[in-house]
Amino acid sequence: MRRVVVLAASAVAVTGLAACVLLLPGDGAPGGAGAAQAGGAARAAAPGPADPLTTEEIRRAAALATAGMRSHLAAGRAQLLYVERDDAKDGEGARRAEAYVYDYARDELTVRTVDLGQGRVVREVTDRGVQPPPSRQEEAHAAELLLRDPRFGDGVRSAYRRAAGRELGSAADLALRGLIHSAPRGACARHRCLRLFVRLPDGTFLDTSRIVVDLSAKKVHTLEW
Amino acid sequence: MFLRLALAAFVAAASHASPAVTIAAPAAAACAAPYLIDKTLPNGARWQMCWEMRTIEGLTLRKVVYTPRGGSPTSVLRSAALAQIHVPYDSGEPRYHDIGSLGEAAFALTSGDCPGGERRAEKVCVLDRARGHAHLKDGYGDPAERRSRQGRELVVLAAYQVGWYTYVSEFVFGDDGSITPRLGATGSLAGTVTTPRHGWPIGVGHRHFEESHSHNVFWRMDFDVHGDARDVVEQYDFSGDRTKKRTMRRTPFTRETRAVNQRMRWWRVVDPRALNADRHPMSWEINNSDSAEYRGPADEAFTRADLYVTQYRACERLATQNPSPRCRRSVDKYAGRERLTDPVLWVNVGFHHVARDEDADPMPIHWQGFRITPRDVTAKNPTP
Image (spheres, rainbow over the protein chains, first blue to last red):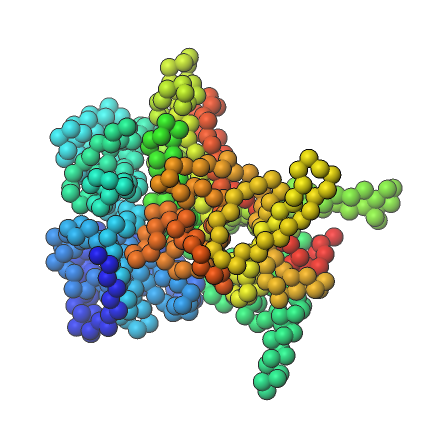
C-alpha cells in the first residue's frame, strides 16, 4: 500500500493549477498557522533558510502540489490539509514545502514535497493508516456530520439553544477543535476519524468524549467503554 | 593550503576561543525579523535562535546558539519542539493525543499575557524576567568579597487552546546557560464524571468526582553541540545503595536507546572534540524532569521510557501519531538498534493530575518540564 514517487512535474501541470488553487475548498487557509503568521510579516526580501513559509510560498506550494487533483478536491474526495515547511536536514538551505493531501475514498495520505526554487514537486510519498492532525476544514466538516446525525444533531442544536438563547445557524457557530482518533480495530483502524471538542457560547463544552466522527465513511460512531 | 585548512579546523575544534565559523551565530544568518530572537541578558549571556509556528508541532525553536559573557557563540540545538501530549484518563478511557494541529490551536496573546515582552506575529511572546538568585556568597565582613547577583531569563512562549485545556508552552533560557522546556496546563477541567475510585470530589458534597488523568508530554530535541557533528549521548549513574561510597558509571550510547529515570541518573550530549579552556569537552546535561513516570499498556509502549535517543530521521516528527507517510508511527518504534551518528533526544515527562476544588475555574496552571544545563561549556562561571 505504500508508494514513493519522485516526480518531475511538467510545466503543463504547474500552470494548470494557477487557477485551481482558487477553487480549493476554503481556499486562503491551506497553510493554516503558517499562513496566518506569515501574513502579517510578508516581506519583499527573499526569506532566510530558517524563516517560515510566506503566504505567497504556501499558495505556490499548494498550487504545485495539487495540480491534476482538481476534480478530486472539488468533489470532496480528497483534501489539502495544510502546507508545512520541509525541515529535513538534507534540504537545508532550500525553500521546500510539504503539502499534506488526504484521499478519503482510498484512505491514503500523500505528502508532496515542493521545491519552491525549482517550482516543481520533487517527491511524493503515499501511505495508508497514517493520520496527521486534522485541519480546520476537517473540524468544520466533522461538525456538519455531527449535526446531520439523527442521534446527535438535535441534541447539539438544543444544547446550543440553551447556551446561546438562539438557534444554531450552522456548524460555523460552534467553536471547534479536533483530534485524531485511531483504534487498533474497527472502522477507525483505517478511516480518518476525529474526536471533536465543541465549545458553546456560554463557555461549556458538549460531552463528546464517546463521539467519533468518521470522515472517510461520513458517519458518527459511538465509543463503548 | 590543505595544511593550513586542516590546522584551522584543528584549532577550531580544540579551542573554545576559536570556534568554527559555522558555529558563530547561525540563527542570525538563517532568519530575520520577526522570526529572529537575539537577546543579551544583563549579565552578558546572549541567546540567539529562530522561531517558527509549525502547523503540527506549534512553536518550534531552531538554531539555538548560546554565547556566555566574554565567550564565543556555540550552537546548542538545531531544533526543539513539543512532540506529543498524551492524556489518558484513570478509568482507562478516554485517551487523547492532544497534538492536533497545534499551530492552528495557538491563539493571539495580549500585552497582559506577555508582560514587558514583545509579541511576535501576535501568537509568540518573547520576554525576560527575574529568576531569583544567580548566586550568593558571604564576604565574612568584607563587602568587596561579597558575591550576590540576581539572575534573569529569556522566555519564548505560545499558548494553545485544545478543548477545555489551555496549554502554555515555554522555552526558558537562563543567563546561566540553562534551558528549561516546560508545559503549563490551565483553562478548565474536562468536567468528566467518574467513580470515587478514579476521581476526586469537586463541587458541593460527594456527587461530582472529577476524573484523574495524566499529561505525558514529549519534547523532541535535536542537539547540535558546538556544530552539527560528533554529538554523543552518555548516561551517568552512581552505584552504591545504603553504603557510604558512590561510584560514577558512564554509559555511552552508541546505538539507539530507550532509557528510564533513576535516582541520581542523568544524561548529557557531548561533543568530545569541542573543548573548553580547561580542555574539557563541552556538553549539555538533561536532568530534573520530576516525571510521574506513567507506564501504559502494551499498545502504548511509547510511555515506557523517559528518554529515547534515536538516529536523526526527518520523517520522525511526533512521539505518537507521527504524521509522516512511510515512517514509523511512535518513538518506541524509532528507537531500534541503529548506530547513532546524529542523535535526537525525546524527553517524556508525565504529570498525574488529581483534580481539587481549587481547580475550578479557571484552573490554576500546573507545570511539567525538564532542565538542560551546560556542563563544561565554559571553564568557569562566566559571570562571577
